Length: 549
Image (cartoon, rainbow, N blue to C red; front, side, top):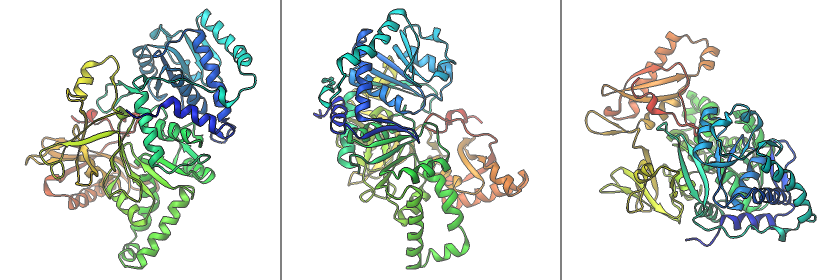
C-alpha cells in the first residue's frame, strides 16, 4: 500500500500554493488556493451541522466548472463519497442514479434541477445550487444548518491561514467516488473508487508527467469521468497548477482558441479531438499528389514534417511539454503521421475501474502502436498461452483496482475473479519489454467464417480517414462484414455531391479499404447510416444497438 493519501495531496497543495490561482472558468475570475480552502472549510461546517457521516454519499450533477471542483474537494476531504453524474444524462437517468447511490445531499446546476422529479430520490435532505451555492430545497433543519454555516465559518476562520487547513487522515480503503457510466452494454453500473486508487493515480502522475507549480492547464474533458477528473483536475491541483475550465463541450475552433490564449503546459485529450485535426488540417494537405511525392524524398520530407510539426505545436498553444491521448483507440494512420512529424504525444490506457490509469510511457520513451507500460501499482498480463504473440484478454490486479460495483455483487464477481484479477474486456498482447498493444474489445471482436478474429476498430479507423465520412461502424451480417457509414453532410453539400454520387464514392472507399487488409477482413458492402451513431458519455459508439441492423 502506498503511503501517500488523497487528502494529504490536497491539503499540502493548498498550503504550499496559498496565493496562487487555482481554478477558474474560461475567461472568468476564479479562485485562489486560499479561496478554495475557505469554501471547503465552510462546506465542512455545513456537513457536520447536518450530521453527515463519513461514507455518506453526495451527488454532484452539473457542467464542468470551478464550483463543481470545489464541491468534489469538499466531499472527499470530509470523508464523504462523491457521486459525480454527467449532465448529459436524461433527467430520469439522473434521478435514478441519485436514488441508486443513496445520496443524502445533492449539488446541481439550477437548470438541471428544474427538470428532475425530486420524488424519485426522497432520501436527499437538501439540494444546493452549483451556480452560486444557494439552497434550492431542503428540510427545515437542513435549511437552518445551511444558513448558520456562513456565520460559524466567519467566527472560526476570520483570519484564515495555511495552518488552518487540516483535513485529517482518511483510511486508504475508504470509498471516495461512485462513478456511474453507461458503458457499451447499455447498463449503468456504479464503480466504487477508493481514496487509495485516486492517490495511486496522482502519485504516478507526479513522478512521470511534466507539470510544475503555477503551470497553466486546460480542462475540457468531462470531469464526471475519471480520466478528466484525475488528470485535468486532481493531479494538476496537487502540483499547484492554475486550471482553466471550459464549462461547455467546446467546438474545435473554441478549443484551439483556448489553447492559444492559455498556452497549457500539459494537454489531455481523447483521440477524437486529435483525429479531427489530422483529418481536417493534415490530410487535405498531405493527400495532394505533389505532396505525396515530396514526402517520399529524403531530406525534403524532413523539412516538410518539421513545418507541419511547427504548425501543430502552434495549434496547441506552443508551450505544451506533452499531449496525453486516452479514453479510446487512437487512429493508427494519424499516430504514424504524428510520430513522423515529431509531435510530442503519447497514448495511454485506462478504465474507470482503475481510477483510471493502467499504462503510460512518456512521449519520448513510448513505442509506436503501444499504449505504454503498466503503472507501478498494477500487475498486468494477457490471458493467453503466449502473451507476446497470441492475442488474449488484458487482465490486471493491484492497488488502484476498484472496490467493486455499488450494490451489484454479481457484476463485481463477473469483473474480478477469485484470484483478484480484473478482466478488462480488452484484447491485446504485451511484448518482452512490457509494452501493451491493444487490439480491440472482446465484445466487439467478430469471428470470421475462417475462424480468424476480426477487430472492427481497425477497419473503421481507415474508413473514418476518408473524405465525406464522419464515422463508421463495421458489423457482421450473415457472416459478411458491412460498414455503416455516417456521411459528412456539410462537406457533401459544400461540394454539391448528390446521394447517388456519394454511393459511388463509398464503393471506391470500400475497395481502397479492402486493399489495406487481408481477404478475411474484406468489407462486402458500405451502407449509408443517415444519423449519428448513439454514443456513451465517453463518445464510444453503442455497438450493441446496431448488431442486428
